[in-house]
Length: 347
Length: 201
Image (tube, rainbow over the protein chains, first blue to last red):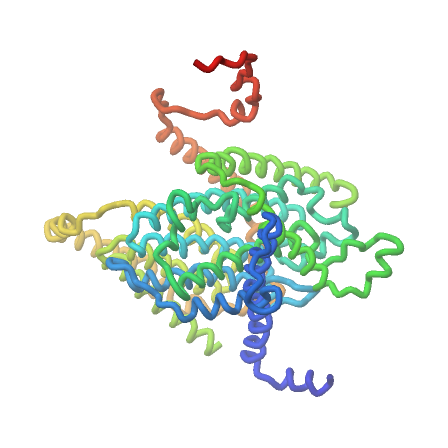
């Protein structure tokens, strides 16, 4: 063990950072691959089917087979498409989904870049994901793709405001922009986590998160029945796969952020409970973070199997006329709770 | 320090290149995208100047919101390039005049006489625990509270005015009232009647 630490210290700083990035991104991409498998299996079971079960035992190798298949397919450039933008769009869409993990704390102090404006950084980066969609829709030179891009851009812009306001509530409650400190402010017990004092904001954030990632029931941007596949209808092969990766990476990011802001990040849910808390104290915080994140990732799939698609005008109404007023009112309530030193959470 | 200087020149070069492309590209969508690049590099420069709050807010507000709306509009425009070029020569003298005046003014105001290196020594780098966000917040909410609130109210007025300008009642469009829609019960829409079986003729 000692020689390993010595070796780590001997490595130059850029190499250390590169290794840390690899340690975050490789598990993340594997998680994305098996998230697609879990989605097909779970939705299969919910619809009384079996789901993929041919490649490997119980279909375990299905994501690998899909990746290999997409890798070997031709990337078709539509005539009249803007070549450079067409090829750059998938990269723009996956970039922010991966870069946002730089400030994500996995455990107390375990974070790539511990910056004190972490929450702002996350907000700024997630607001950039829309460019991939818009550029893809425009550069494809196709009416379906363009319609899909317009729909998705309008939707993302609308829900981003509600999401941002929900995070302002978290910011007011925690009094810091550092993600690690936001988690530490929720320490105490399951009831100290911010989901309880910020319940409306949590609901708004989570539902807006589902809308931001263009997932069912808000997936009008790729409504199969009207505009085929929306903004990525012209994409094939690896270019399509990158869009797919970006969508799932974003879903994981939103789930993890929800856990961080409202469900105490790596904190144990049994903390503060007399016997149970002591018996489970050995469980590493990372395991709790992972478990909670998996729960929200599961919710994404559950929603998709349960809810019918929203009508477009109702999506807009929900975003602008319901969520934004709720968040504004609750920010005032949180501020009052904070100023009044509400016992239990803010004393 | 040397590495930071190198970074500064890289970002500044990209920023200038992108800014030139914004005004020279014929395709307005390309111009808008180059403007995004310019904003991004500007944010990077501000980060180097230890103004992380302003840098991130620039990306959040201008890249994440304003430019998205720009793109939205620009993409849906069908710009006729020949028409655009026709006015170029005619308006050239006026444009050159305005540009020249602005250059002279800029040189007079931010020239080396007032903003030279000797009047601004390099500031000492702030300690690692220094938070630009906190400092800005304290300044805005104590010393500059009134200007801040007045600016906020002016913005609110602008929002209301913009909405007021675009609001128009169109009596011929059909609206759906979701509140009424969800209150509908089966018996409002459906009538079940008792009816004897009909004889087959």
